[in-house]
Amino acid sequence: MIIPIIQRTLKVLFNMAEKKGLLILLFPILLAACTGKSGNSSTEQASGARDIVGDYMLEPVSGKTAFDYFRDEGILVGWNLGNTLDSYSNGIGSETTWGNPPINQEIMNGVKAAGFDLIRIPITWMGHIGSAPDHTIAPQRLKRVAEAVEMAHNAGLKVIINLHHDGSTSSLDQEEGWLSIGKSYKSEDEYNRITRQFTRVWEQIAAYFQNYGDWLIFEPMNEIHDGGWCWSSDFRSNPAPQLAIINKWNQIFTDVVRRAGGNNAQRYLVIPAYCTNPQQTLSPAFLLPNDSTPNKQIVSFHYYDPWEFGINSSRSNWGTAADKQKTDDDFAPFKTRFIDNKIPVIIGECGAVLQLFPDDPAREAQARQSRFEYLPHVFSMARKYNLVPIYWDNGGIRGNGEKFGLLDRRTGMANSVDSAELLRLMISSVKQEVN
Image (cartoon, rainbow, N blue to C red; front, side):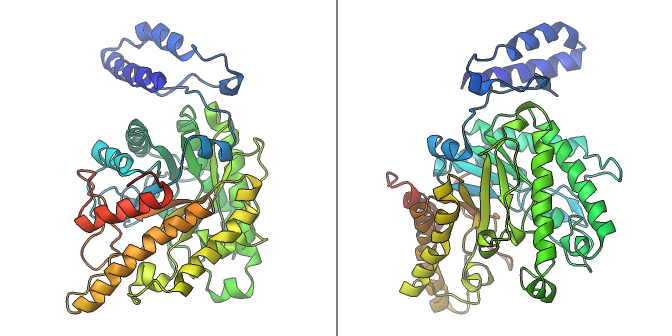
């Protein structure tokens, strides 16, 4: 832990020196600290890597495969900081526009204290990206993302960052999400234009975070689809063009990160399939990219099944033997295809909404009991097959929207007695030693 402590100290000194115009005096100190690397060959950095990017020192990396890293670091369960840096309005990513407070250290500490090992921080970059050809990301956006990432790291969490709602509105008649597969498979010119922007955005993100250790993981995109969630007539009749684009974007992302310098040659990368759908992830059409650094890939899918219970609230009962068997059947193939081949798998989002029916207390009670059965069962089945479930927490606890909130974003504590018990049940389902 001495490296992060020294790094934070030097960061403070750097900022003070910058303000006072004394950077030239501080440079020898920084240089000596940054070049004092371990002699362990697994932590040696690529030649030509910069020791400082901005004010962030080059950190050591483990040199382990993704599978061994997850095992040795005890990464068993995660949590999503949803509806925060991924929130947007009028095509502009905005941290608080969907009702959550600004990110603070308390929520990160609370996530760790609850028993989570990893945090996924979804990020919407649109509205902070300049025009072609450079597509320059606003420095303040990168800085704020870095602040959130470092708060999570300070709490002892591994971190995933991504492009989130940049690709959320992908149908032809919606314009907000620029990462549009709907436009890309219809027009080669649009595909080329969008892919150039995708490339430039990831070049900048990877370069900015190049010195961060391998605790920081990149994910290229989120739930990319043509507007039909795998059910559009175009996709059902001819999925091949869209599936090919996802494979191409995953390959481009991989190549861009690997050549971005610093620790990026060793960076762990999440690879999603079309719409991050479980069935599409298991499809033979989903191909992992060719990677110049082998064994650094992590497969991801999302799971809210059955949708009528997990998200839609049109179904309030869950828990029959058939319900539970379906989860087992859904997860088992991931072990055969990926885990048994030493490729870690995360369930990048999962959960079930809080269902409230003020005019129907019996139905509300049934939904509550079903949720208490569903969440620990999903987490238990994930553990059975060595998958890492990452709960989707959007902070919501009231109103008409999806209510996935379990942790109070201001304090980091459970937001209710029920939430505290659900957190305990989920964690104990994957960490049997937790009581």
